[in-house]
Amino acid sequence: SHQLICEVGTGNGGSIGGTSPLPASLSKLLIKGGTVVNAHRQERADVYVEDGIIVAVKPNIKVGDEVTVLDATGRYVMPGGIDPHTHLDAEFMGTVAVDDFFSGQAAALAGGTTMHIDFVHPVNGSLMSGFEAYEKKASKSCMDYGFHMVIRHWDESVSKEMEIMVKEKGIKSFKFFMAYKGTFMVDDAVLLRGMKRCKSLGALAMVHAENGDAVFEGQKRMIERGITGPEGHALSRPPMLEAEATGRAIRLASFVNTPLYVVHVMSIDAMEEIAKARKTGQKVIGEPVVSGLVLDDSKLWDPDFITAAKYVMSPPIRESGHNKALQAALSTGVLQLVGTDHCTFNSSQKAFGIDDFRKIPNGVNGIEERMHLVWDTMVESGQISVTDFVRITSTECARIFNIYPRKGAILVGSDADIIIFNPNSSFEINPRSHHSRTNTNVYEGRKGKGKVEVTISRGRIVWKDDELKVAPGSGKYIPMPPFGFLFDGIEKIDAKLVSSFKAPVHRFKSDV
Ligand SMILES: NC(=O)NCCC(=O)O
Ligand SMILES: [Zn+2]
Image 1 (spheres, rainbow, N blue to C red):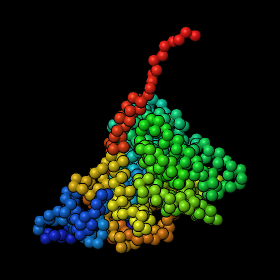
Image 2 (image 1 turned 90 degrees about the vertical axis):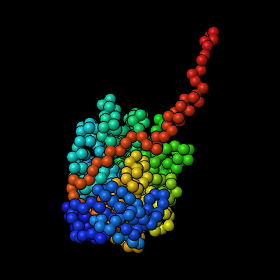
Image 3 (image 1 turned 180 degrees about the vertical axis):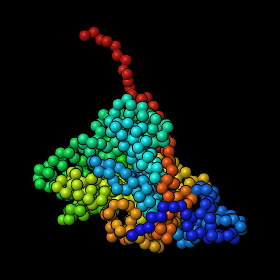
Image 4 (image 1 turned 45 degrees about the vertical axis):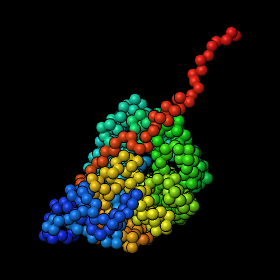
């Protein structure tokens, strides 16, 4: 079993010409001897951190300086991962996910992720109440985090609150569910209004893309045929329904002329919709999640209900072949960054759907496994470079959500969120030693190359020698400013369109 120490420490550092042992409050850290990797280059350099900020890359340390020294020889020194898609402490169909902002983040840090962006749901229709509720949940955070906000209905107050969220609360992304009919789902009218409002505020519209009406019909068909187990979940919502909604959202975003972010792209069919749109120059971001990249749907047919139910998420994990195609799309830039959709339920919660797959809470783990599995699947296999790895696990997310280079880079002035990664070591995934509170792990038994040996969060060593040193309340909320590179040029495209109209036609009334 794992160890979770709820205190802040500086690790077992040494000193250069200074005294040891080091006081717990020491704020200077030197990472020596590693290869520093940013999304555009690798270089042999040391990284010097003071008070949680990177102050030098290739530093000159004077004799007598007191520092904690980490030897990274033979290792990669990378910006910590940023997970753009999590649901901590979230409620799904009346069931609350088991990982809260402390356990989920502790798991993240043990796996080399130093920031995540979670989804805030409105409370009683109010975005502000939702924000305040999540602020409270997140008060136990042990690493930095940001928020997206879910839009579930439309009226004037939502429109006004969106502005407050963007301008006063640092939220720059709003998610619209095109599925989960009767709960989260919105119709095209809400989606269209929401997209327009996002555009005017410089916020990113995000979609969970599945045709919720057709899924509802598909579920009914399965139940009528007596297919009540987890395989019915996959059969009721085939890739074509994901593709339909993805294509529809893309076309609506094009009509509004605003950037679109498609979360958890799970199928070739949906990915191809994104590829087509990107080829025309449309600004569409496609986010595969780890489960879609590395798993296939075979376990949903497992005769043991609990084994099968742990793989239930939406859109479903697809049959083998979709995973490889999503990997290829990621390696060629058709898809841009990797999330997890980490949303964990334990076996007893999944068992709510023992007689009806529609009652199985949707969601799988991944926040602790993301960095290792992406490395093993994408870098070890030769599909992407080490710098690409940094881009798709960290930098691209920071750019899209407009917090680069504070996050997502090892540069002077950036927050010291850093990992030391040993490409020659290895990992093995086991639910008995993982840090999530869930009692299952969809990646159980997977082994691979590479290991996050050290995680540094805002200059503090929080993971080293397989031990976590985290403090509830030490994580900070990272506000995300509106606009950013995805919005560049939007007005010019609008103006060009308007000037291309050969309208209005000035008509004269002929005699009739
Ligand atoms: N994806 C999933 O199954 N659970 C989390 C909720 C959502 O994002 O759809
Ligand atoms: Zn979703």
